[in-house]
Length: 329
Image (cartoon, rainbow, N blue to C red; front, top):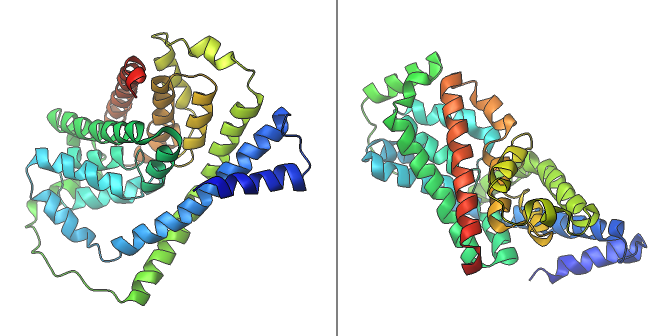
């Protein structure tokens, strides 16, 4: 399925640019061309067809449905909804305010926000091609579990008291307002669905294309220029401290779940254990500084620090778990 991208990279890097396949630079350029072209095509195709399916989705009905459910069910539904919607950190504030304004508990909202950047249809498809269905399934389960447990914990400590004042008022107003009655979803014509899908594809691609370049560029650098055995020597023996070190290393960086896949591939190829790699990539996607700079606009420092510490602890535990069971993957 993906051989066409390898052939395109062969032609561009080795035939057109006349780079040597035996050189580190040629290998890095080939890796960059192959993965960028593959991810871009998958992004456009997958986002367009997913958007077609979502064209008639009534977000207000989804909010009302979640608000009326038991919290335990709400965490699962919020996390599941986050897994099938292609939101990223740049969408976090309007999504957060939309859910709080509807009166949905903070924990359910956070279940959605924690899961959404970790899982999307493109990341799942790429993981399937790189690491197989077992790892992909475990990745989805882990991502949703982080969202569900995180949401339940934040509700248990009454995290809504640490919202910024305007967000807290919006939540209180939403919780005191009567739930809207379910309305029939407007049926869109095929032309309207196409227009919606096209606009969504252009909007999402416009937000993420540069992060794909950055993510793949970092992956190419690791793939082509890191000395053989360097990563394996320092972090590849499964030392207990390598997982928290990888989590801390990912914080200053930023990528989305799509852009981080080639980085994950390069780290694993260079000898980094799966758990350590996963901990690094999850930290890069869901615990980066840009993400928290945006969330600071709706959260007080106490809540932000709590979410931050919770994520770092979760990613560290997940890394240790995957390293311990990597032989069975």
